[in-house]
Amino acid sequence: MAVVPARKLSRDLHRKRIHQRMRQTLAGSEDRPRLCVYRSLKHIRAQVIDDHKRHTLAAASSLDADVKSQIKGGGNIAAAKVVGKIIAERARAAGVEKVVFDRGGYQYHGRIQALAEAAREAGLKF
Image 1 (cartoon, rainbow, N blue to C red):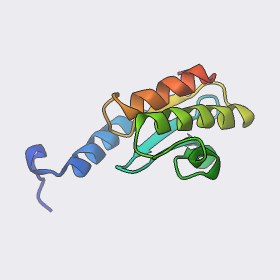
Image 2: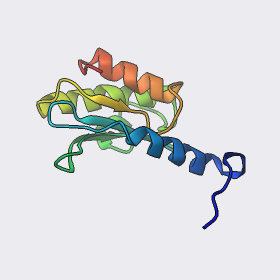
Image 3: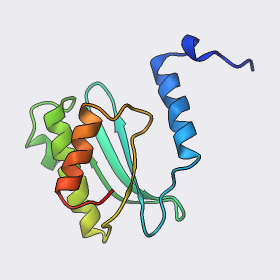
C-alpha cells in the first residue's frame, strides 16, 4: 500500500495519524491511567484506561442518562463540561487521582479543552 501524503488525507484519517504518533509516547499505568477523549459531531465520550491491564476504570458520555438530563445537546461545550465533571467523579470513585490526558489527536481547543478543565476542577490532576 502506498503512503498517502498528509494533504490528501481526510480530516479523520489525519487526526488518527496524529493520535497514533501521540500514543507512541503516551500510555496509562496503574499509577496514572490515561484519560482518553473521543468527540463526534453530536456527542463526546471519555474513558479512564489502564493500558497495562487493558482495563477501563471509568467512562462517561453525553449519551449517558444522568448526563442527558443535565444537557440540551451532546455536541457542545456545555455537554463537554458535564462529561468532564462526571468522568472525574467516576474516576475518583474508582480510586484514581492522577491521569495522563490523551486528547485523541484533536486540538486542545473548544470541547476538548472544556472537558479537560471541568475534569481538573472536579479533582483530577493532569
